Length: 197
Ligand code: HEC
Image (cartoon, rainbow, N blue to C red; front, side, top):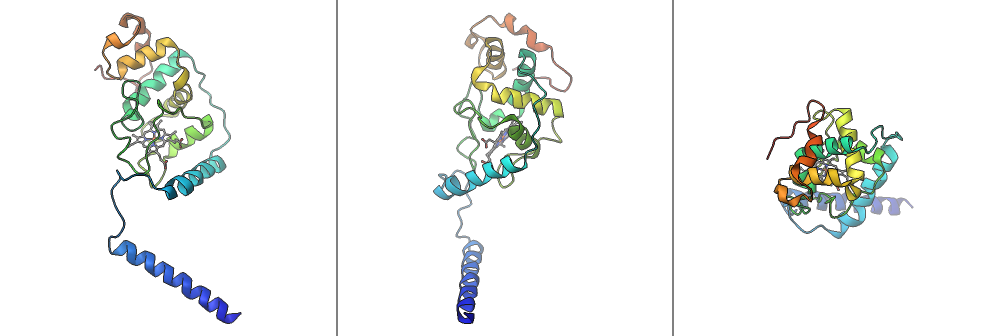
């Protein structure tokens, strides 16, 4: 039994040394634009889902999906998130394939997690990934509005998707209705100004 335990210990120490040497001698590929490995897909992603499900407080989203809230959330999203997660104009973001792990592309594949979990991620970010926590950059209302926008992205009312097209930098000809119809979106709280493109 004692021999067995010693052998087991030696195997663990040996493996640890191999891993340290592997890393120390620069054998790990540092590039972010590498194809995503099976290990990432099979281990890290389910681990993240499980961790968020366990930790995200069970709170209800206080922001209902009115057009006003969706447009406010859209602006926060367009200003802060679209570069990595894509938008209506560029569903596959420029950075989509050059980060590791990859940012999900929400226009191509709608966010399907419950609001409390999306909110938790937006607030705190995801470590060892490019996903920042936004709690010092956005206020609570903005984070909830973005959460609401995220979970309604695949079913936006016409008025909201039209103002998104304008905000995302598509020409106003992309919008199905004349741009005057999106005038309502000028009405939003302080701190959410959208630079006119
Ligand atoms: C610099 C790039 C970057 C920016 C900017 C960014 N994200 Fe992310 N985000 C990521 C990456 C990368 C992941 C994937 C992390 C992982 O899988 O471990 C991610 C993951 C997420 C997730 C989890 C999705 C899921 O299905 O697991 C949500 C929700 C999210 N981001 C929302 C946002 C919102 C909202 C914003 C803007 C307020 C934002 N992100 C800004 C890079 C970014």
